[in-house]
Amino acid sequence: MTLINFLILYFNILSFEGITSDINEWVLKKNENNIKVYLRKNAKNTSEYLAETVVSSDIDSILKFILDFDNSYKWMYRLEDSKILEKSNDTLFYVYFKMEMGWPLKKRDLVSDVKILSEDNRVTVNLTSTPGYIPLDKNLIRILDSKSTWILSKIDSNKTKVTLQSYAEIDKIPSFVVDMFILDGPLHSMKNLRKNF
Image (cartoon, rainbow, N blue to C red; front, side, top):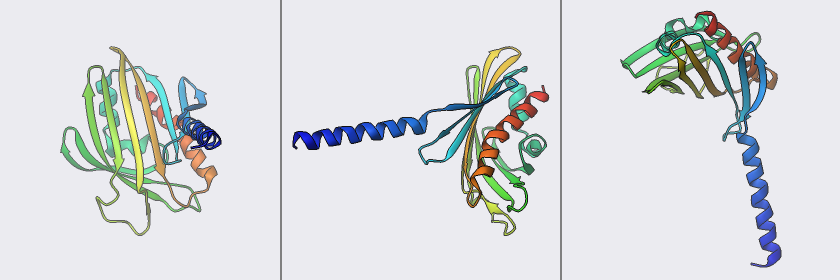
């Protein structure tokens, strides 16, 4: 390998590393009422958000509220319907969400498995899309790729840090609508979560 070829390869690697760094870097986009919302591009080049706040309650109470998926539509952004499809055990079950996108866009639905991991002073709730778990509804567009993670971290006996990280591949949606969802959605949901405690 000549010196010139080596230098070209070296600078190409540096450029690629710079792009990778930009993709993975969280950028603070909103900071309202002690709720912070960050955005980044993930490895799939999909917009992903991370929202965090502090809730004046203990982990167990907040966890019980979040896991009540039959009532998620009452406080989560743009949900028209939500329900638990099956509870395999205390740490694994399947849930369904229907989303109102606003005219003229077609409504979406999402099926996810829910896995719960409890550690000392911390609980993680992972929701991963399982689009084939129930038949498609011809009146809706199913979201095929989505992942959300709730992390509840104990601060003290009556304070918990709540973090929600999420992305979804939503096809045939204008970028301004996607931007609205990934900025307004977590802010709305976190505000409503805190109102319940």
